[in-house]
Amino acid sequence: MALSRLLSQNSRNHRLALAGAGLLVLGIGGAVVWAQIEGDRGIAPVASTGDFEVTGIDVEVTGRTAEEARANGWHTATRLAWQKLWAQRDLGGGAPALDDGTLSGMVSAISVEHEEIGPHRYIARLGVVFERARAAGYLGLQGGGTRSAPLLVIPLLYQGGVASVFETRTPWQKAWADFHTGESVIDYVRPNGGGADGLLIDAGQVGRRSRNWWRTILDQYGAEDVVIPIARLERQWPGGPIKGTFTARHGPDNLFLGSFELTADNEDKLPAMLGEATKRLDAIYAQALAAGQLSPDASLNSTPQIDPKLIAAILDKLPPPQAGVHVAGGPVTAAAGGVAAGAAIQVQFASPDAGAVDAAQAALRAVPGVQGVVTSSLALGGVSVMRVTYGGDIEALASALRAQGWKVTQGPGALSIRR
Image (cartoon, rainbow, N blue to C red; front, top):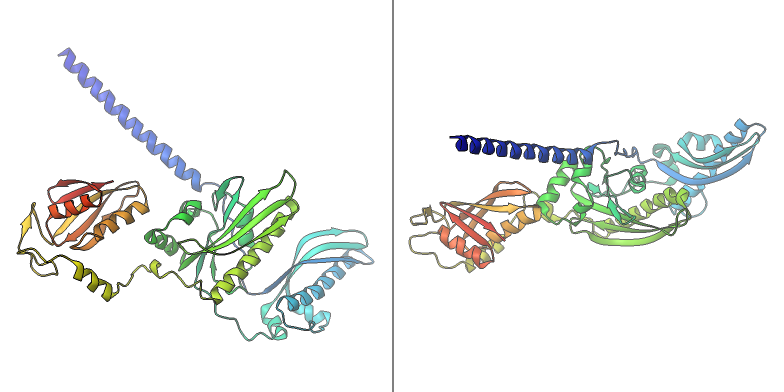
């Protein structure tokens, strides 16, 4: 009797230990997930109104007072920015001479990149934003061109041997958040990087090929496809030059569109280099759009259409139907292994990631006689279940899967497969 009580007590202690370990694992897992989304990580993109922004205007002027010197500097910057805007749009000749009042009426904002104010001198680097509605007439605009479909932006940065997107605030993410997209022909969809963005979009997402997985991500942001601007920064020595290699990629297959290199003299010049890189990458995407290379990937369509000729070709390759079995539809009269031929068979499989789900579905669809495959229970990181409609008996389906290299365990009306 004492031995029985001792064994019972040991069993109870063992169950309590297992329960405690389970709670500990859940607690650690919850902490890991929370650590990936906690903190002030996001950088909100600037509003894109379509106004014309001209940056990098250097001025050095004087005045009787500091206030007058600054006002003279802003007027000078406005005239220089108007000339630069005209040249950037390649309109030919020189910019039309406009009086200060007309130019000031077109300016909606002046941004200060750097300034030094003295008693009689003003030295600064400024940016000027011209209101589109007022400046368009002088620029001879006839309306905007064709814009792209909504494209999700994943700004991928490599530095110090680490790849990151939204895990932390990065200068590359900020460069794309600051980029004025209103004048671009590309309809960029820019996540701010906060909340669940760090979980849904990471460096690993770029390497995934699962269309179902990509479709889920794109639906979250209302996008139809994806562009991946990549920056790789190499610091020559602490405080020294920074070499940047920038690559434009597109689509779930990570297709290459173009690449170039830039160099910043030091950390202070890095934001300016990244800002220039975003403009040049935007130009690459605009050229790709004009060449028809940015059309949304048809395989991302959530309701793909199957070519009837392909269906007919597959049916022609199917073996002749067995006696008493009608594989093309209609009543089923034969049964084997406890499951009627043509009935739904449950197939369990390990699904550590989206690629494993796609591989299992492809394997089932490749079996002659399979009429339909539907994932009825999806558990990434666990065991998922498919419902397979098969024009044969369960033993034949098991044999076909073993021939593909799967290890198959057969049960009443169900199969379990694994590699």
